[in-house]
Image (tube, rainbow, N blue to C red):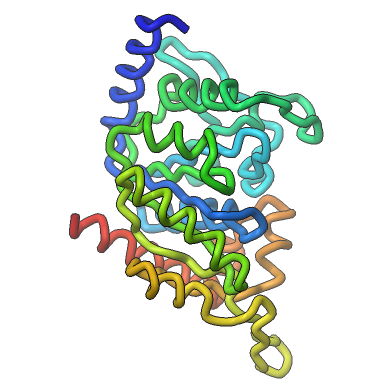
Length: 272
């Protein structure tokens, strides 16, 4: 792409992003911590509070948002002023590489520059419109996609970092925190996912993935702990069915924690 074209694309990104009040990245140091599930349910939580919400699946080769929202048959379509995003029945606007493939089992085998190019296309061409929140689900780690998002969005509101209580996750997630700090992204806080399992029959609590990892990282790195989401087998079941958990189980402990996390994010952003 010529320098002139790059400048035009950056101008278009700035124009699109200027209509979005808050841009929040959801990231993790490693995979397998439920980051995408957290991102989807955060988007749903904001929508339930009456906000206009968008969700960008920036995990190009490992996309899972279409499945989690039962949008696997959706596609992106050209319009006069750009590309129309998919949309959930709650009005959440969604963009994902999963909308570009005919077969969801076919791998996207791309090197870094192609993935970065698609992310920039999503940012510059998707007709997001006026939004209160754009939730950006990043792939695990600190590679090309997170770096591109951090550099191309001029005013990221903050990063939410997802971990689980295990010792390994504690060590790896610190990289994500330090990545955000190095790129001057405000750190909204840490979410400890899969934080203990409470037996529905006897009420006993079992800390399957150890205990207190999120609290320890938050304390050590002086960042807020937004919440501890308990392990609930129904969360995975809801994801497999493409119906976000917070919709199907509004009165569950998991849903209550999500709503508390959203309130803390709101307070963080109001205080900036």
